[in-house]
Image (tube, rainbow, N blue to C red):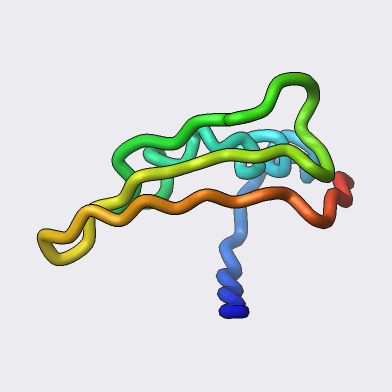
Length: 74
């Protein structure tokens, strides 16, 4: 499995940043290649929640699905 780590200093309370970053519907606002992203499951976000996204990279359209396996809010 691939792992990606990015570090950015954001002058906001940790809970506010976590809520924004963990909501896939916000992905197109901060992931430059993401075109759309949506939740596939209902209810509160947590372990087992599923989502999908579509990104465009180098003229290629890539679709990805994912499921939250670890949920550790601040």
